[in-house]
Image 1 (cartoon, rainbow, N blue to C red):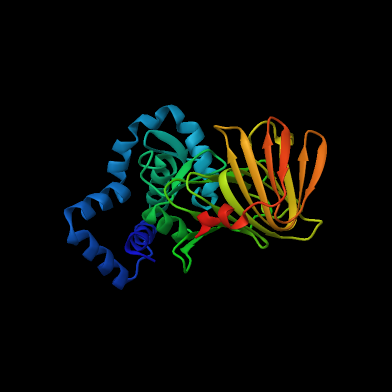
Image 2 (cartoon, one colour):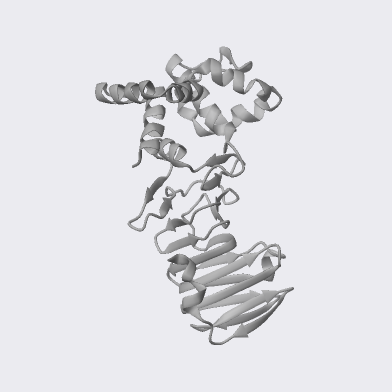
Length: 311
């Protein structure tokens, strides 16, 4: 864990009053090392500063608190007496929980600080964008929402928690910007994302047929029983226009909205393409080009060139 991730974790645990004496000293030393550090600390944890930053949230207050109540149900007590924070009427909660809620509200609604300031973005089912820079990865990791770590090659690996209770309609979208990223979706499904690429995946990961939507360039490894395949769409055209189904395969998919072209290359295993009511079974080494609900096949694609971006 680098320093930014560590500070993100300490910030979160500070709001929960969970810091040990040595961790308090560590955070205090970081704050005193630079005036900018102290400014960042106050901006991220001081309720009055957060209130000033988000005074304009009034018009969305009801939806905001619905999201918060869904995310932090243990924080709200059943007592009906209302209190007001940021001008919003909510159920009573403890003083410690109030700090946590304000802090959570700040992260929930802020999203990324700018269009090009973070390596990746996680868009949650409620439509809230979470920056995946070092600081916010530490914060998310501290909350144990996801497991986020760098592998031996220095590529960020992202592992969502198991979930069998969420409605099937709720999806996350993971999008890269200036760096590559790996999504370990469930056992047997591993998706590598190139720069400026995305994958939309279900919050409920305990299902027989896993469905994902990819855009940009992705390398997908699937090792699943035939009864529990991975179904891949690209979002280019209608969903039924370009579906790829695989249970034991390694394949690379380039799907560019600008050109409307999908290029699927099978490195090994077997994959089935369903296109405009027709089915085509790919063989290893083949590349299928899909455009305007039609496809053509290249029998001997240069696989090493196709996945060169992984290095």
